[in-house]
Length: 143
Image (cartoon, helix red, strand yellow):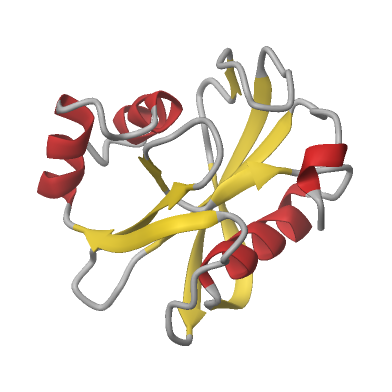
């Protein structure tokens, strides 16, 4: 899908996946905003659940097993500009079970790695974690 041709719909989804050591998968996008973050993106008119499958599987090559579990957010609207011109986004975050091997999207994903909570704290403190995800991880008490 050529996402550059689509205007911002002000809805976004994020997917938190953990490995067998309880590490969290973070990726670096080839597009703004740059930095480490869980697989995420615009909903583009799809439901949050459908967008979760599309973004996670498209960016990582991993397959979601079962239904994504929605995470309750106290403040789901975040005011961060995006590369499509949006000034804010209404978010839904999911936790998922998954299977497969990482196979990064050549169009969207620059890098991916599994991080411990301590390593994610280091990324946040050094400015390498996307700012919106610093807020979400703090709200979810992950960091």
